[in-house]
Length: 224
Image 1 (tube, rainbow, N blue to C red):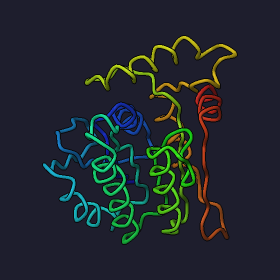
Image 2 (cartoon, rainbow, N blue to C red):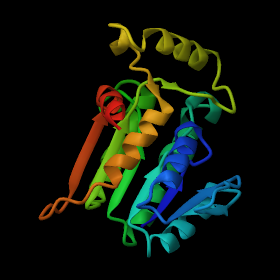
Image 3 (cartoon, rainbow, N blue to C red):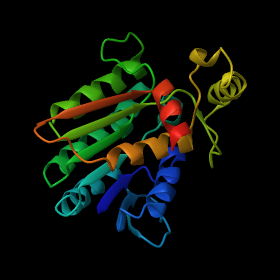
């Protein structure tokens, strides 16, 4: 099986690439990113701007069955909510539409806890809108993962507030306070994303949607 991954240089994406490399069911991992990604199964496509990703996704989607998006940014890194929408939301939706033009059966999106189009929080509102838009494209199977605060070794810090949230997440992770921030290890998200994507498609189902919340991600990962 051939798969495509965007966001492969990020926290969850880097773990996803490693997990995919170890999966015997996967023969080729096509990655599209702004930096080279090394690996024995990897076909690393490097494009300087996200606008150049769409035609590459369309080409790959002619021979791939599974598409993973672990691509994303934060409001702080983007420099405001408007830029966040352009970088994160618009890029992800353009990627999804390009994937739908090919033979992609399964689309996997790494979203966030609390994503809801009706939220009063702009970040969560936009993420919820993206989820709805991706679902509306009608892939045979859409898998959306909603991890809480992500725990893992980041190459680049995400700012004081994020660092504080991670510390709180680590502290509360294995306690009754877990629901406070629902901290989720990045490798758990990656393992669950890959595991669910490789499951056989259900027969007779035109459009299957699976939304996996933080608690279920942790529970599923513990069994893998």
